[in-house]
Image 1 (cartoon, rainbow, N blue to C red):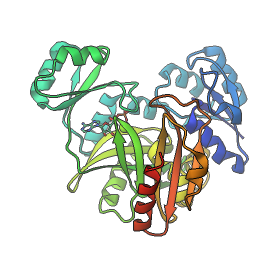
Image 2 (image 1 turned 90 degrees about the horizontal axis):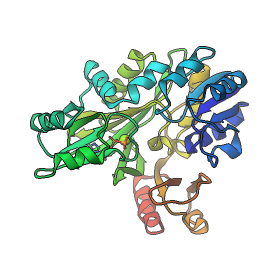
Image 3 (image 1 turned 60 degrees about the horizontal axis):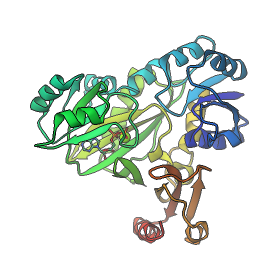
Length: 358
Ligand SMILES: Nc1ncnc2c1ncn2[C@@H]1O[C@H](COP(=O)(O)OP(=O)(O)O)[C@@H](O)[C@H]1O
Ligand SMILES: [Mg+2]
């Protein structure tokens, strides 16, 4: 069985690592020559909208999935004409556009931050009056790691913010003073079987995920699963879906969703019975899903911009290092570390110890 992946970054690399034990092979379509999944897969180096490259991919694989949501819709459509593409094209179309994903949340009775659509300076002005400041201006598409966003506070120039996001179609969203950020990784198989991982608590710095900690028996677990289930069923979703929430008291406000394996689920490689990567593959292949039960108390720390001293990291007991084979660059995710302990307290101690090293 050969799986085609649109995108050849670390998520594709980790999908491949999870797929080989299941006897799967991988072909990635990715424009960058130094794609970090390339050494583990067959790499078709071409633009995502190159019809000839898409045709070659379709001829080589049995099924297509993707590791990022900004794939042109036409590419997914072309592939979908000749073979299964999971998650489905309309799941992708919903998740890649903040307008559509927020409208879907609302339709399903899932709370979100207040938001308004922005398409020029005048609608930005109206949105700022309607939503109130502080607020965040976010491009509707193509944003990641906090890119394409501007926080607006009283007195800030709307023109500057509008220019800073490249005058792209956007939403203005109320800035939420959340208690915590959490995310749920959910998976649904072609057969309709569903599974949910324990919530992760996420800490971001400058819009980039730094730390995810798996929560045990969190009081918001049931609500998050209920919300995720509504989305999975409405979209007839297939594969792993991540939903990020702002938690405010007993409320969960859905921030965004990702139609793919997600950075806040990397802890599952060592911290769950079955990793999100394996379960994504099981789901899209229609295989029974694996247990999502946690194994011990686990946290994941992202390595951003700089390689750590591997011997020092691995010298800490119960620590696992994942390097993606990417050249270090400021603000670039180049790997992650998983920590697993028997108790919550021991885990917190390890996290502090590790933070001093990186
Ligand atoms: N409305 C908001 N209120 C408070 N913090 C926000 C808001 N929107 C975004 N953030 C912060 O910025 C991070 C990145 O924003 P997000 O919308 O998830 O975009 P992306 O992950 O695609 O870059 C969030 O995880 C959160 O920490
Ligand atoms: Mg996010």
